[in-house]
Amino acid sequence: MKVVEEIKEIARYIDEELGDSQKYAKKALCYKMEDSQLAQMYFQLSTEEMDHMNRLHNQVIKLIKKAKEEEVKVADAVEIAYDMLHERLIEWSKEIKVMQNMFRE
Image 1 (cartoon, rainbow, N blue to C red):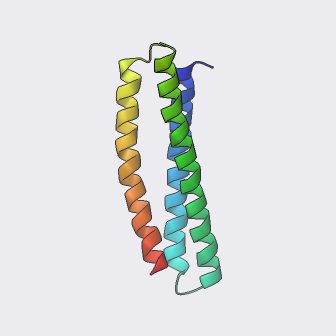
Image 2: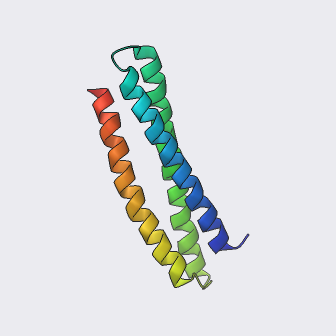
């Protein structure tokens, strides 16, 4: 698979992981007072999804670096798209971490 295609595929996976992490964090907060065991399970799932997202993100960074080292032309559009994804990833991650921290309180 071409590097650019792999980066795009991983970017989609990152979105999925963030969406799932947010969904589980919301559920953890919903059950925090009502059912602590269920809430804890959802919280754990949320943190696991964030771990998956971070691992995928690290691979995208490695793929971009490797492509540049091997002088594979990574289209400017792909880098711009990645930069936008990265900004969104940071903001979305912050929101999820706020929810996770609310659960910890």
